[in-house]
Length: 181
Image (cartoon, rainbow, N blue to C red; front, side, top):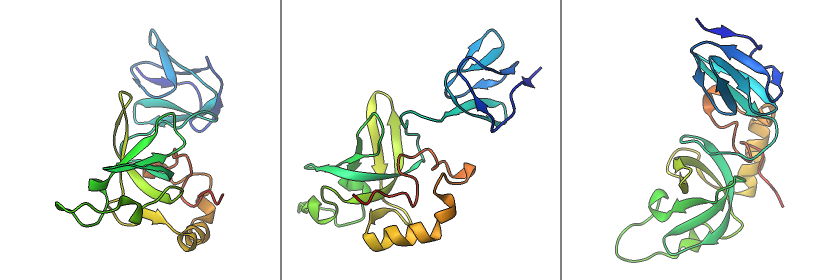
């Protein structure tokens, strides 16, 4: 038997009872016996049988498939280091960007340079290795000032998060929330 005790989309406190029964344990929740409790202050969500708390404050933990905005912080020999406002620095390998391949090396700073903003997708991540990003895909890549303004205009209503089915609302910058420092 599965019983949801808290209301979905409700703000919950640490230690608050969320559900009882055979629910799947999600992020920021813990189980004692058959009872599931909140591990942080956040928004309670239920997805099928999965019980999750989305923290109101704290670091972003990447998930495969997330869309993330980030800033290039280093150009290496085989790719870029990207700050995605997470506890981990993300890696964007040259092989995950559109462009020439082959024995002749290209100057990677011609594609992205330190300080450039990029919209990318998390390709792989586990807590033993830094997140791996890709910019292969429609709409992904360098974000220019013109594009930042277009994103702001087109997605003004989405500034506080994307629809639940996008997976992108957990990103450090959010679509259309690009830093203009």
